[in-house]
Image (cartoon, rainbow, N blue to C red; front, side, top):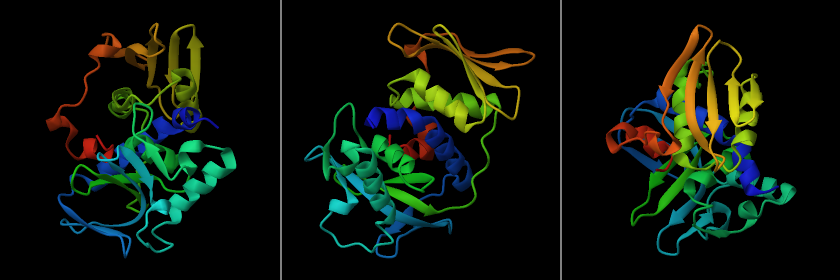
Length: 254
């Protein structure tokens, strides 16, 4: 399996869960990471069970998987990343079985987080800063229950916009088809127009692909008529500012 196919198949579902995770934990303030115990403890009292996935370092400009890290961690802390490596071996995904992967336009810590969730039984990841620009990705093994995905534009729209902002998708038709399947809905393809209808409500999205295969227009829809969120080209999709990103932006490692 190609890494792009894995990311396309899972990016929407992963982003949906990351946003649900943010809703549950809120802006939980500062935290301490204890990888010997496999815990992250927030000053608000929130206590999460975590494992180590890997780290992205600016010096060597590479991603290092935790199973290749010379530091000795417990099997519990490495359980998720070992699932990721086993998946990579089974499906011949080079990036998941190579100890150190160069950082470039096709691979970064966020992509590693998405791929890890796709290849393991972990629901969400948590990026933390380790100093010197190094970013560590943690697999969240224990967390409060996450709310079910909502079909409302107030949830579906931000998920779509966040995926556009991340720039991870290679094949938008494949990615939206996979998301429709996960949501129990349908994806209708009308040439370069893709109509996503999730199950559980009458809200959906209509995306028009441009010449580059990426969304050029997007509108959220209801049975009573379209709820227009933007009619601008892809370039005009609003990327979150630092104020808007807050803890949510940090959850995506951006």
